[in-house]
Image 1 (cartoon, rainbow over the protein chains, first blue to last red):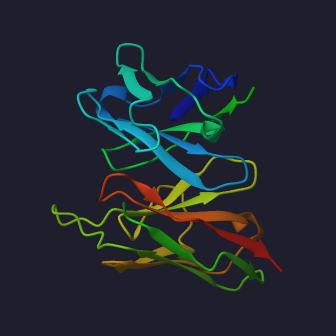
Image 2: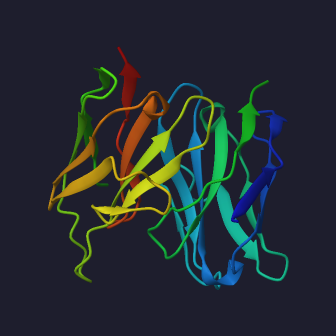
Length: 118
Length: 112
């Protein structure tokens, strides 16, 4: 059974940094692309970033490009999202999701809440 | 960026009746590899999203056959036949053909 467990969320001041993690199990991690998608309180879904199985290809939404970095540790089956220069508009629940290929979002984790506020 | 427009915004359905949700993209979703990367997700209240349909009409494992997807090019539809109480939630279409990946605004399904 696929399991994705996000962690690392919390309250951070504007301009601050946070690193999210997503621990994966139940599938061959290196064979899957991975994604981050966020949902602001009471709002819809917004794709944030994707990374290929090998980690050689990465993609970002314009809203986070230059501030967020996606990475993965295939030896530990873990996905990361390093978030710098955080803004109030980055406040959201952040979900990780696996994809059988880039462009695909299959199973999702339960999400971790990031709140950017002074 | 490809804009995904969903309609209606909300839908109130009688148990056992059908419901249809429309999703229109601002560009064709046919990829150069011949596939159309249009997906449908369900988000039940308080839960994370789960994928129902991928590549227009393929149901994910465990998804009841009451859910069906159709369409081509820029116009797509999710149909829920014989709506059940567990179908309450918000439904999103998402395109994976063009970067950045984009979602529709969502359609809220409620039971009368």
